Structure formats: structure tokens, C-alpha cells
Length: 392
Ligand SMILES: *Cc1c(COP(=O)(O)O)cnc(C)c1O
Image (tube, rainbow, N blue to C red; front, side):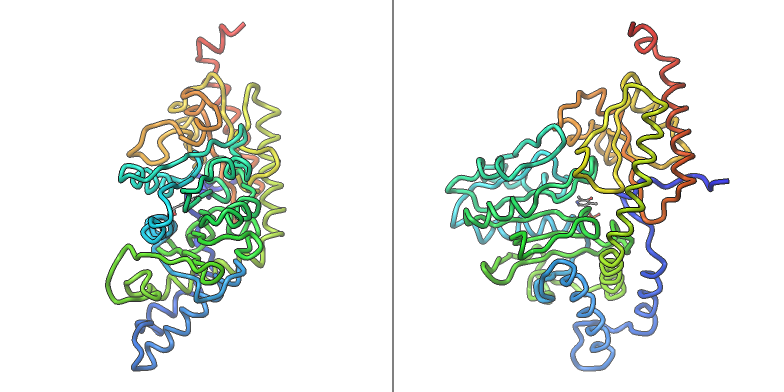
């Protein structure tokens, strides 16, 4: 028997890997110094642990340790990247570019800057949620100073051509930021090869602890300068004041390293389970739509819309399987997903969508159960639907 409920919401957050927990524990009770304390060994030991974590994060990106700024997560990293860089860039121009399929922690800072007087272009994706380098290039003007494009989408899993976009931005002299929160450990990114100037990531999306993330900030060719969001003790070379949560930093470093080491193996296994889930549902349920790119997508992502089914009812019927719906990304926002709307779904179909997020701890038995649960739920709901019965 499979244990219920089943967790298939790994784009929202992940279970902390036991190896990560193991690595973190000594830093609560044994090595508990402040990594900024320079006058005693408690501080030095903590600092050594933080610097190791910094190198682990940098190593995964082809960066140097001193280009990594620890933050509280990807939301802060995105805000720091965008608000922090434009404060320096405003003498060069007043135009910003992002896409319609960004996470809210990129879209909302961009929209705030637009209200404050910046020109903002929101590039539309194609029908699969892909943002092309050509569309970014076409949006760049002589006033453009910053482009921010998500590396891999958290709702539909589509992987963008980050290297191509990076090269376009580099050639046109524009700073390029990418929210790589979902991509790290799944898509190989290299800040040199891909010409990335700023990159955000978060530990809790890659089996690390909640409450820490990082921003990569390019130091050479060109150096990207940031105005900090917080002033204070001048930690993180002045870019992010505040005592570093040493246990969380250690956890982030460990999580990144495990994710890199096991990337290929995990992608194969999780991708196989995702295909099994998709095939299983497609064999049992008609009139479904796959959202996102058929090939260029995260191995653990499956996003499906079920015509003639109410979104709310569908969620209710899925009580044994934890998934996300195409509405109410946060409960404070009962809107249909802006990402599904951007790839052309109407409001009803967007609401009648489910995001399955498979991960490191997902088992084959859980997928078998989910195929049955989804198929039964949709069949039951449709049998009660007047539109379904009268569709002819
Ligand atoms: C989860 C997520 C974020 C926010 O990360 P936090 O660390 O929770 O602030 C940002 N962008 C993407 C793509 C995400 O999936």
C-alpha cells in the first residue's frame, strides 16, 4: 500500500534531503559562531563553513565564490538583482525587459519599477511558454539596461534558451538576469558560456532548507554593481547586510552539490516517471491538453488541462495527491495562472489545470496511484457535467 497523501508539488517546495539535514546539524549546536566574528575560532570555523558553501554554489555555475551573495531565498535574490542593478543602470537608459511567464518575484518588482517611471516591455512566450532569443533581441532598444528571463518555468516546466538570450544581451551591452530557481540541478547552466550577469537560486527547491538562496553577481567583463536592499553590517561585500544563517548556508551548499552530482541519473529516473504519469492519464482520459514544451521541459514537470471540468472541483477531488491547480498560485490571489493565460488558455481551462511536480523522493507506486486518482476524479466530475454530456 502506498502511503497517503502523496506529495507531487515539488515546484512549490521539496523535502529536505536527509544528507542535507545531516550536514546542517552540527552548525546549530557545535559550530555556532557568527561567521562575521573575526577575533576568535568560533567565528573562523563558521566562516570556513560559509566559504565552503559559497564555493559549492559557485562551482555549480562556473562562477567564483566571491561572486555569490547569500540571500533569504530566490524572492530576495530576484528583488536584489532587479532593484539593486537598475539603481546603478539608470544613468545608461530607462528600459527594462522581462517575459510574461516569470515568477511573481520578478514580475512584481518589474511592475513596481514601471510605476516609478521605467519603460517596461513584457515579451510574450510562444504557445509552449518558450521565450526566444529573437523576441528578446527585437525588444532591445538603445535605452535597454536590464533583461530578466526565467531559466525554467515553475508552472509548465518549459526550459528557455538561456545561452542564446545571454549572448544576445551581451552583444547588445545589456545586463542579463535569470531566475534559475527551478533550473539549478536540472539544467546545466554556466555563467561564462551562457553570458549570465545575475542568477537567482533557492535551496528549498532543490532539497535544501527553506530560508536561504543566493544571487550570482558577475564581477568581471562586466562587473555588475548593486545597490543593497538592506543597509547594516556590510556583510556579503556590502550587497546584503545581516548575519549569515550558517546552518542554512551549509545546507544550500550541500543541496547544490548533491543536485549537480546526481543530475543526470535523477533526470532519467524522474523523467521516466513523468512519462509514465502522462501516458497513464492520456490512456484513460480524453480531451486533455499538455501545457508547456513537449521536449524542452523539466523532467519532473507535468502540467495538464482537463476540458469540461471545474478547477475547484478537480482540486477537491484530488485530496489524496498534493498537486497545484491552475488558479490560486497563492491563496491571496484567486486569479487563474498568468503563465497559463500567457500561453493562450482561457480562464476556465487555466483553472481546470493541474501541475504535477515529481521529485527525488517520488516512487513508481505513487505514480500508479496518481494515474488512477486523476482518471477517476475527471471521469466522475465529467459524468456530473451537463456540458460534457451534451457536447455531441
Ligand atoms: C519558488 C520560486 C521562487 C521563490 O523562491 P523563494 O526562495 O521561495 O523565495 C522564485 N522563482 C521561481 C521560479 C520559483 O520556483
